[in-house]
Image (cartoon, rainbow, N blue to C red; front, top):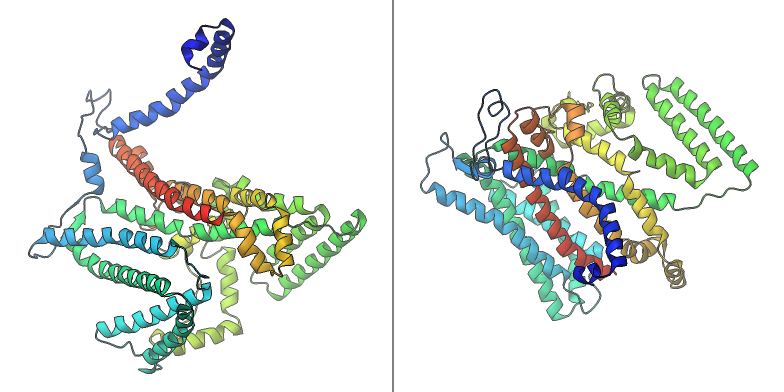
Length: 529
């Protein structure tokens, strides 16, 4: 019913007036605190507004600079210190085309792989063995192309021969599976192999020519691409976090019912007492790492509480990291990763001094004699090292993901799976892994798709709090993400126009990736369903 028809009836008019009266504060709040600032930041992105230059004291107003901020952010310029080469523009265009060819090949590989088979698909292990064989062959061919067969210092030229033998052994199951398919399906697999080969060649060419092209053309702001790479690198832990959340949900979905209330209390006291005794014994045997005994005692305390309280206690304890995430947690992890006094390095220092790791070090020194006879495994510097700073933050993020909201989403998804599906699978003789792969995982496809999309958005937007508290963006800007870069430009350099351009560039990147995820992820979900 349209608005005019509604206004003709007094009762409906009063109802609509009451509804608009109730909605007006929310609409005003949205316009003032959300839509208004967003539109204002879009206008700011096309100005040179800097708080140190344009304010009431100086009397200067911001100027409209069109797309100059985006040019400073994304464009490339001729490197004045680069080599003098003929046709430098052709080199830049060639590098751009090679980079643009990668997503095109990925798309065709996806479309070829998603086409349905008339018969049973090749098993997963055959695909993995085929990939291992291709990796071995490409490794040998790459070494030969560089003019050396990469003879191993211990095995000599037997090392490339062993690679070829391993490739041949891995290819046999793949060839056997291909021979079972129809001719058209085998041809489609051949096309997929050709596309994957072209993709590998393209990636290799881009990797080898990137340094030379960047010596000719340099980014106007190279820090933006460095921070973009830092953001993408930190997002590599997202699949592990999703898998950890799923494992945690699979564990916590189980019901814990151990006898009566009195029996549970007795068993909990026994676990607690035995665990504390074992922790005291461990503290006596390994006095160098007192934190290890404390961690073990905490595990037994949690186990005893879970036995007494049941599944609810375990779910609450698993979810606590999500509640406590904040500055205090980041400071705690910063202390844990302290290279001199932190318990993490204290544990690794004790572990590397054991006889088992002495044997491991001896094997590594034999395999790689270039390391020298004095080489030993040492604890990393974690947050103080350019190499280990990002992995340290990823480890902390993985710990937080185990009990995050994703775990709750998976718990809800597991609770909604009909039990009749598991009963039918049991009647057909399915094992536990087959039940998970053919029943649980397809039913969780919509939940996984939602978690992946939201994780991608949050990963591109995140990283500011950890970097600000734990590393201050260092060392050597190795943990500075795009969100932290936005904060630096807006609230340290006071360049609001440039910071708005960064924000809208980040918005466009997130929007494009979300549309890609929605386009192809929805197809996968519909096939699973």
